[in-house]
Image (cartoon, rainbow, N blue to C red; front, side, top):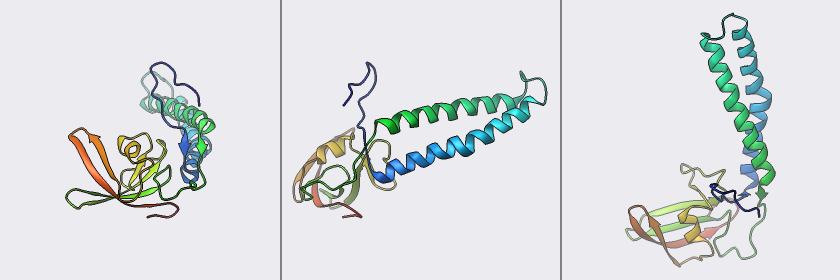
Amino acid sequence: MKKPLPGKTNISPYITPQGQERLRDELSYLWQVKRPQVTQAVSEAAAMGDRSENAEYIYGKKQLRQIDARIRFLKKRLDELVIVDRQPDDTSKVFFGAWVELEDSDGNLFRYRIVGPDEFDPKKGFISIDSPMAKALLRKTEGEEVVVDRPGGAVAFVVVSVGYGGQT
């Protein structure tokens, strides 16, 4: 794995096949649909005359810069990613791609899936492998206690179940 550049954070290169597909779809949409639409709008705004006070032209150029920056990022990131498309040899332990069910000391249950940093989604319960929670969970098995440092202090959880594939 490459060393991070000075001042850059070291984020994991791992991604699920579904996450890679989502990034490829985003890249395709930006390149084949969104960029041509915005380019057309900028051309039409430029034809209206004075560009220095033309809000549509100025906004369109700004949109193009943002789209181009995202396209460059996605192309570079997709080249660096390592697709994890198989289960680990020991499916009783928590590794990348695992669905993990946890219970806190109050009996509350939480379900998380450990995914790459490009695909985390709190609404779906997807947490980044680089997060403190995921780092604490790695290599744990059912019944083990996990202590996670959070801004409000350390919180203890018990691993209720570990699963791969669909869900726990």
